[in-house]
Length: 213
Image: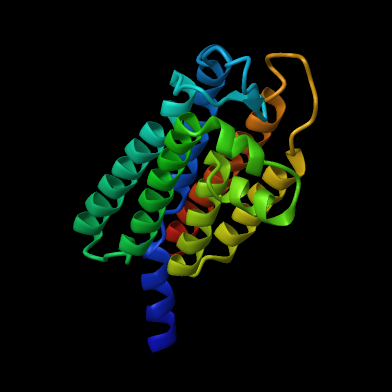
């Protein structure tokens, strides 16, 4: 009896479908910003990975601002849901990590713009460079925060979605392509995984609620 009650409480506390849908919208909305929001590159330093290092164009500002707004929306959702159900989810660590990663990404962008020569010398192939680029990337910050949310909600479906998302992120990589839309397939794939995961988790939560009722 106690085990069934604990399981029901945990099920009611889960709401990860909403963050997944929010982040899917953030990913999709980035397409025109990334395509048309790049600034001119400094010919003395060039660009790193197709991104100019001598300024902070709109494309660089988009991600920190969009992610912070996303976490504001997620906070509102969980607080409203907690007030309605009378059940709170320990969401504070997830929000703290997500916001910290977004700020770290913003600081990295600012440092890159202010020290192009230093960054160009350090940037190169290697496990540390790959790890650092992944952690401070928009896709990486979303994935790492979702891993913590899966732990908080003890949700195996969310963990599966997050792992699939991270695999698509790591598998896309950076390939030489002169097209200005070269980034679009990986962005759409990652956003699609988040969207599909959010829809599936939302339907699963609704079906479980009906069966329990």
